[in-house]
Amino acid sequence: MTEAGVCGSHTGHDDGVALAAALRRRDPGADSELCTRYGRSLHRYLSGSLGGAHELAEDLVVQTFAEAVRCIGSYRPQRATFAGWLFGIARRLVRLERRRQERRKSVPASAQVSLEGLAESSSPHDLATSITESVAAKAQLARLRASLSERELEVLVLHYVYEFSVQEIGSVIGRSGRAVESLLHRAKTKARERLTQDD
Image 1 (cartoon, rainbow, N blue to C red):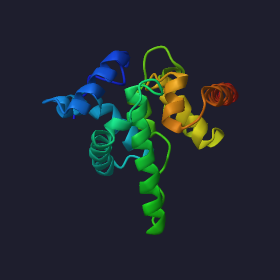
Image 2: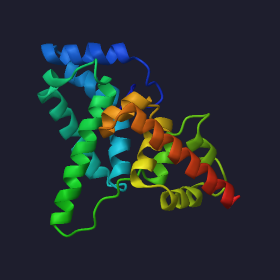
Image 3: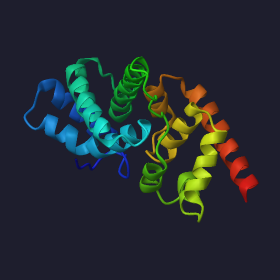
């Protein structure tokens, strides 16, 4: 899959609205544009959320797109960006997959982004990059996992890796902007404290 979209060039909110409108109209090429624009970043997000299970992540990308097309009538630009809405669908599918795995008494999939995925997707001037560019990047990230809650790490990754705004993160995880701000502040504080202790 290829992508021009969320990670790296997560800018055109109007483009997301236009794409949603095209999907509603069932315009030729709209489905293909959806896959092209968001496929790669969704796969990276899902793979990380599933502990690096790439094939399963591919299946869930397809399911995410299918669910988005099926439910496109429910998308409201006033409530969420298109990318935030799409990632929210993907996140719900991860939760369902975890429940299925638990019922099969298998090891539950990790909800945290994999170290490799985080290292590959960081942008130049953020907290994630300051971690991953260090000599002991993977070890430091492993220690962060031990220090941060699942939700704290999730908002940190969505904000710094996928460049989602506080409002967009709220639409993905189903929390208010104020709650996301609080989570993000707590996560950054704990991350800095842990890295300072390691240094």
